[in-house]
Image (cartoon, rainbow, N blue to C red):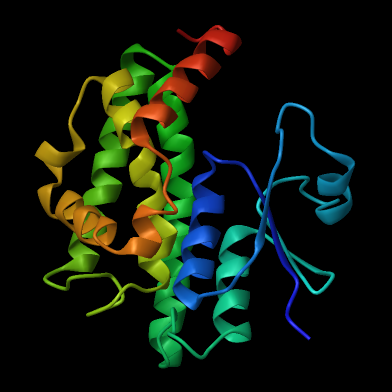
Length: 219
């Protein structure tokens, strides 16, 4: 009996993009269900009653919530084609730590850059650049954070690239000028089909961010 796999998601969610890349990397066929985040469906509320957020993975009726948890579940459930997490326990722990660091920094800082002005925006820009430079140091001379091939940390970080145009335009700065090695890494990732086909168009994301700014009165 074939697996029944459903991904409840939203097109511009960087957290959902992680899951799409992971499923593509594993060659898992799944049904994609787009969620209207302005009016959350009963299905989503049933799937994730605690956080009421996407993405949610449904595998043969069993629910898995939170994108990093979904990535780990994906890696353990479909181990055959490739491994996203390192085999070494210490390296696995470091990968999880790095992904958690990104979650605690990028999304909140990006929101501040897009919705604030003046000193608050400048502080957020500096902190974002500092965070990206820290990741550049972690990447070092490796092609990918996972070494010679795409891995868990790469999947956790690269979807944020789709929001960089919005961050840069709203904040009037350039991440590539400040962190060229990091942007070179994103371009290597985009050469991989599972990544390029799973990420949203940055121009479309920027338009969505402008729509949200207007709707929330933060233009």
